[in-house]
Image (cartoon, rainbow, N blue to C red; front, side, top):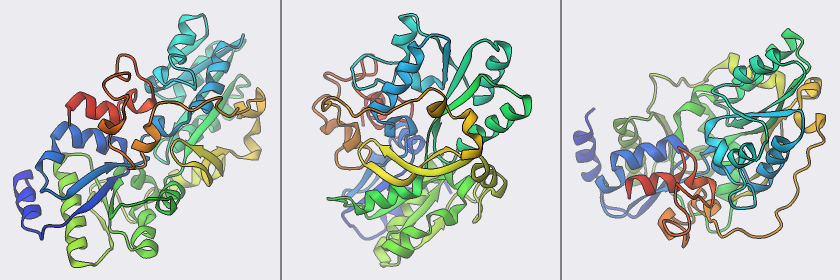
Length: 352
């Protein structure tokens, strides 16, 4: 269905004041790039949720990664988005540590870090495992491959997170005011669309799994608004070309084999039970936290960055007093302005 037809169908629905939340940084950027917010009727508001992996990683966790990057004999391997994410001190990031003599390598996959470790056995290589259920299977596969190759100098600092516990914590949080969810298509590829069935079943909130083209997102918006208009919440899979009801069983088995749920810290949401994925006990030899005695120390002070409020739908990027003034992509105060999936970066780039 073409965008024009979908917009017509959306405009034909009864007028209502509703807030829809997209739980995916890729959706956030696609919405901004296509100008979807400007296409919607008045009263329909789109909010960004905790779906950008870089953005939900708190500064104190980044501090621990930064210390690793400056430690002798250790190379930190990270995705490109992570290089400019600050810790609790503004300007202190992996790129800065590398410029100061630390060993930091940008990689496209954990297997790149694995190959580096094999090529240089006298040096420790730590991969920063960032992401949700989407990237967790790749990280798990790297650990299994490291075991197969007998590598002793490769480990993972897991920052991996699970979406469902975060959404439950968000819904239970004070001031929560979202009427329906646009659910992340790439996470649903792994979990299955049914992984989001708890939203209508337990909370009475409409949910639509969406792809990433403008037409995909508009279709999800139409379905959500239609459900709200009818007062009939349910889960719809608007991305059937990639997402099945049950998802990727093999990928989930790999996650369950190598990784284990644990209590974890989220920017904007605090500590949430079973919301993170650490290495399972049998793979402790590849756990950087255990190998190097990593401790997450509480932040010394409160940052002026309001990224946590942005990714929980409490404010829009432009409502942050730092936005476009003290915080720009060239000199970011927080990860929402750094990440290619960040809500602040999207709002700044496309001037929503």
